[in-house]
Length: 274
Image (cartoon, rainbow, N blue to C red; front, side, top):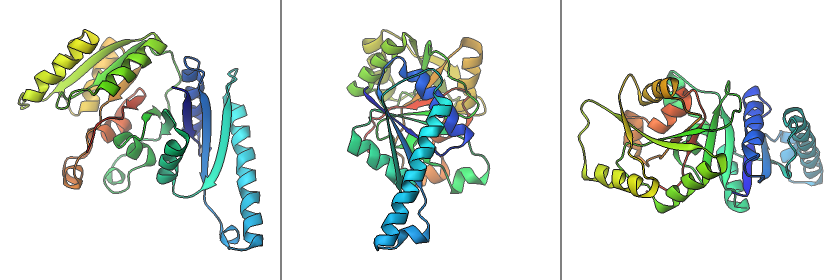
């Protein structure tokens, strides 16, 4: 991985994600892209020379603010860093930036969400995790960077890993010098499907491992957190599925729930096709 993107909004959550990105990058020395997306006031939206001058003044002021924000949070790390400030919708601007700049990893903070907000509003972080344009890491607002020694890949076994996902996981573990463990949370009423044995065979063939099965508790995130508390783990990995709008409405998204509830960072792998 050669290019990381860190969206910034100047919050404590954003600062924490930035510090995590600097720590993570000591294993890659990738080029860091810091992106801030700002709202445009009416005076800068006018389609004339005055509006263009005002827009550029605002953009430059935010660029300076981003550089100061980086300086305050980078510690002793020194990496090749680019800063971009622009206006637009947060989610689509991030996706566009990933595609236009061939970004390999997005690292951003997660403030968490509960109650009705989980159903009606969602967040940019949760949307990117559910539909990752590249690898995406969500960092809980209270989580401080620490070396990654144990990677937990959470899978329901219903869709086998793609070749690309296998390669990405192996490269990640190699760079971090970390161990991989596959984790399957099994509900009491779960019925084994033919795809399950295919997934297990793929994991055994590619990694020489057999998934650990743990019982379902109040939620998948709770089950995973319990495993982390007992056995350790520094990074959870999810393989998001693409659900229909009806599935999302009534069943929700386990990836989104995990992003809100897990105590460790969550990495979402790209690769599942619609």
